[in-house]
Figure 1: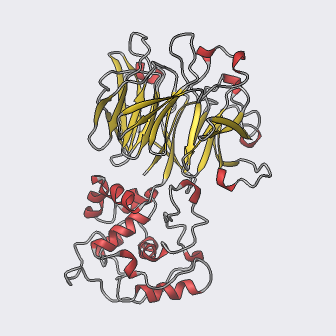
Figure 2: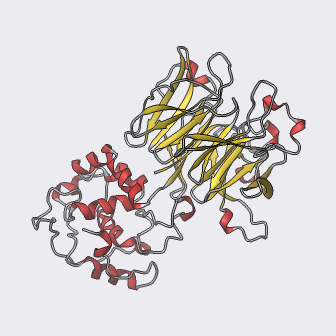
Figure 3: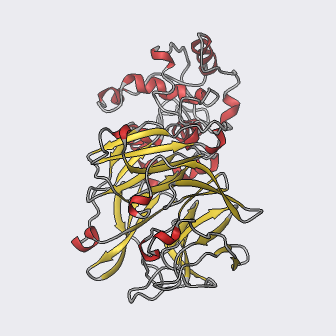
Length: 462
């Protein structure tokens, strides 16, 4: 059954027509009576049950209120709040639902809906709702815990971007930009050495990987969005730190870095979150550490870094997954004009982010956002940073792509109140909405009592 075939009425997101259109669209399709057992569930209200049905039709609505800039495509990801019909409860007259074989759908994911319709309800709703919605029945809970729903969302082109942050010694927290909602993750069941040591992070698929050192050596802990728990991730074939990395869908690539003896590496590895395995890739042309990686136009790039304890690299390297080969790009990242003021070994790796296949960097010395010109292999200034990056040589600041927006996360200024002590501010800017008048960064969120230093940050889209 094709979901759109059920949605013949052309809905509008505003006006009094909305209620009557929903009535027309749902007649003969959905039973609005929840099972008797549902009334005893205290975690999902009767109103939420009615709103679940409205989600079926709401994918045609205006999405200006759902944070479209944090989605990969112009696809509405719906929440109960977004489809609340201005506080009005819809009046719906409908006959009993039938399954695909014409039998009452008592054993379906959502009673009254066949499984095709129920899957679309769940896929188009916000994943912030999944913990509560999983209380509807066991079949629904099994569906979410299996991870299939995230694969189905990916097939539909639905991808919400959440920000994962670690500040000071506090546990990891997730931030949902559309809901403006924080969620604390469980503590990593690691030893004290891993807790206190420097760490690196990477989001791939529905997993958050955190790289660090335990007493026994290198370790990787993996947080699963599906199970909401931490587990050990298999180690790389050649464990390392200070590497460049990035992800594209279900795969990630790490390149360069230092091994346990401090040797600078030119090797690279590919991780598959679906298989949970690492694969060794061909070596880069140059060894480099303290570098940054990113995907652009389907290819993986590494820029910046140092080939030794004193020598900086200005060239970049491009890896073609199809041909399994590296290409050197001269002067791809020449560094800041004020770079001489810094000890290269003290400077953070390049702060880079890719939005809509356009590469941006946050200059650690000039506090400027620059854009890369692929044709001319050059950089130009497009904007000032909303926070200072030069005060700590780029450390403690996160510069990330989040859907169609650039995200800068760092110690707060006047938006955070006072001198920013203990306040982390999330700033957002959509480059495509630049009007030429120097439009300002938007304050997406303020996190109080979070210290003044971002140790790790990753953005996960699923």
